Length: 328
Image (cartoon, rainbow, N blue to C red; front, side, top):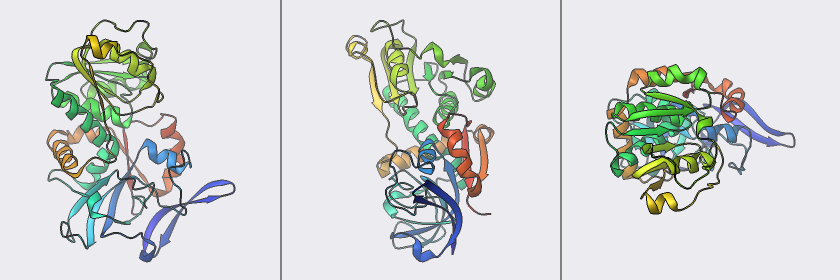
């Protein structure tokens, strides 16, 4: 038997209930994991509310992230007792996910948990933090270096707050943009931001194709007019790592920043990230993360509390990262 948050679809909408299920209800897969922690992400909020048709088959166990210990394996790469982490691969959408004490998945989707990270810390990172590390790592690969001015938009959210902390640890001069500067400014400075600005400063599409050069790089979790504004302010040869669309999926810009300033726009996808790159990113997280800072931006909930938090994360009212205690 295992404990799980089960979603079902009725004529009145999506229902949620914490239930006990037999192991034979688990989907097919070659590795069975005792799940110790999961996390709450924006996509989880959509799934819990039945938005976006992300889940097609019910009943369903959501949770796009999980971390725990292998208990049974038909994959030679994993053995009972191995600590593993899983983000992406549409787990929690097309496949039963991490809001349970047990999961059965494909070995190709798992990553060994690096030394130096606990399963709880891995879920404090989760998809949001993994995406943030991918974005920051991409800026480094581009040539953004310690001391360079780097902007993080949507900085109070899960991706943004982790990106602020990671970029600051790597020596970037981080400016954090948020719509909650009055409430979150001190917390973002504690994570390492040298400046905090109101998102209204960047919220409108630029009136000219190019504005004054400000940023060597940017981690953008907002998209739409904000991304267009940022592109017009990126320095010659700089780069933006786009990893979210909290402000919309359109991009009202021109090709001028790319042609006249040589700006590069990188797309960050953590869902189908290949295994080799995924292992690199997890190792970088283990090397770079400040455990105390991560804990300061992390709150903890149980399975029973998740349905009530769906509206909060979709409305942008959660702060930092939320880890999910699957047991008890």
